[in-house]
Structures are given as C-alpha cells and as structure tokens.
Image 1 (cartoon, rainbow, N blue to C red):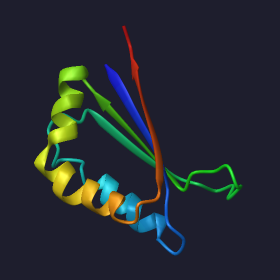
Image 2: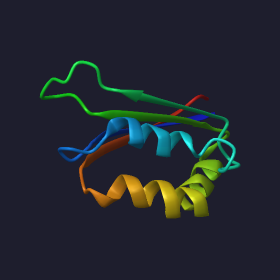
Image 3: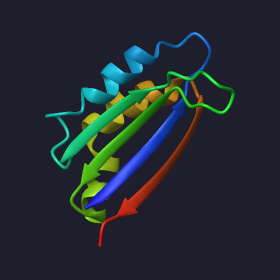
Image 4: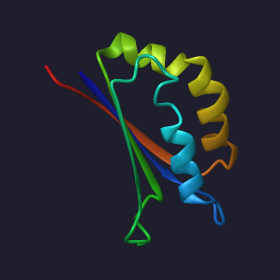
Length: 95
C-alpha cells in the first residue's frame, strides 16, 4: 500500500471547507483510491497548512494512475492549484 499525503496552504480568503468538499469528491469517482481523508487546520499557527489530504492506494502504479486520472486532473487539481498557494507532498510505502 502507498499513502500519498499533500498539505495545502490556501490563499487568503479561500474557504478550507470548500477545498475539503472538492477533495472528498474524489471518493467513488477515482477508481484507484482505496481510502481518503481530509483534515482542516485548527491551530492556525504561522507554520500550519490549511488542509491536509491523505489517500491510500494499492501501489506506485496506482499512484501514477491517480495522478493522471481525468477527474483528479480536471476537477480537483484545477480547483486546488488555481490559487497557487503552497503545497507539500510525500509518499509512504508499506513494504
């Protein structure tokens, strides 16, 4: 299994609840997803990110499919990248 984690710092004035809704909309629409969680920052410190996405996939081939999935690219990436806020990502592999 591969856990893909992305943290987003939204532009000022963007709604983290809307971002969460868009991210969770992948459930049932992106076939390679085995699990999805979205968290919203509650601390609001200078170091905090506003939204965190965690998705679970079978393997790195599924991660590649996820990255190129039409719904992920046309809806989710389009929305999350339009504000050009900061983001950080990483992957963990359970061997």
